[in-house]
Length: 156
Image (tube, rainbow, N blue to C red; front, side, top):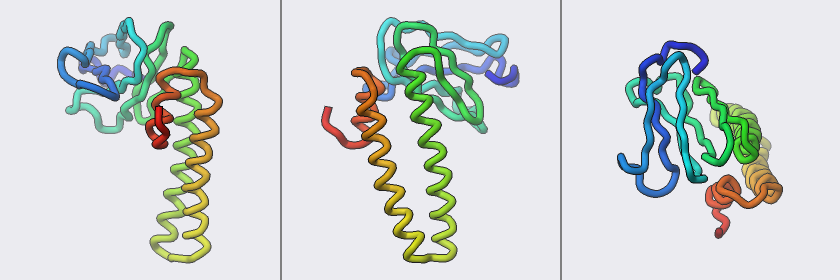
């Protein structure tokens, strides 16, 4: 955690796919601004705080895989430390930059519509799909690559 303001709060590790019940969701408590999970399987999961304390805290996609995964949970949560998590963070950084530019143009176009802006928005959407496909093609087999396939509608 970036500071100790969330001391004593529960943090959860929730599978992206499948059952999200007590048997499949792990939890721990933040102590000294830190928390730790130990997993013996590889999967795509989400780290999130207790719902009472989620304001100004971004949930975080993370790959549970062998090695030490280092995360920071805050307004812009990050992950690093293993190959798939490093790739996941690089992908997320690009998506955030693209979303900011897209949303800015969409807002401007909503206020002052133009064919030029509409065409640029369509081109940005197409570019987003191309970016995801190209990024995915560079990934080794694994749960992150499978995740990218799912979000772009590609069959496994």
